[in-house]
Image (tube, rainbow, N blue to C red):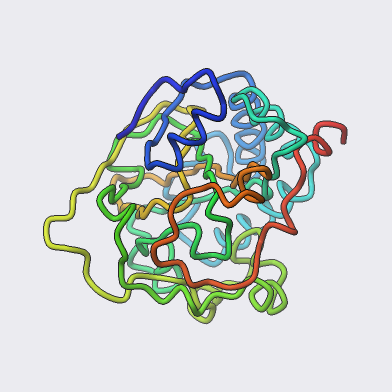
Length: 282
């Protein structure tokens, strides 16, 4: 299911993604530049040993510093320009591609024990968050990671209905409640009070799971429709990664994308995406 060489033709790449294939591609100049930009910010806020558990020992202090870092990343034009360069390097037409802002994720050692972080570990489809069925998710690790520190896909559920409550999510109501939710939980209790789509029943017994290891700044591409889940970890360090969401506008307008088998979220996040050609000119 996970391929390491992308088709040279971008239309073929998109169709493969919509058909459930996943691509883990070698780092390129744009992904390395993104990684370096964010690692510089991590060094600024946490020092060179930014994965150390000492930084997250005081959860409230760590959350506050991550909020400042995420806001700084969100407000800088350079990361969005680098996203556009990466999109172009992958063969997408920047003029017909749109991306949401770059997000920095932190998965903490034994973070699943924190009730405020419970939604981080829900099996979910990204499309349940009012995204297009043409959604392609791009994920970039900031360090070399073994499979125990990444996440897993549930490939058989790509074309199967899974029990979920995606109908609770309406994009317009979500951002009206707190615009800061767009760039990560900026209030420590959002993880307790905000509603996030999740499974509401079990998956079939023995449902296959596909994981992966990766090297820093590699590029993982997958359809946002894929059911996937972040793994809890107890490896004595914290994990940081980047991701953004990409929509090829011609596909969205033509209704091309992964099959919608169970997404009942409402509203649309697409109007708040950034056109990649505009980002390149910024």
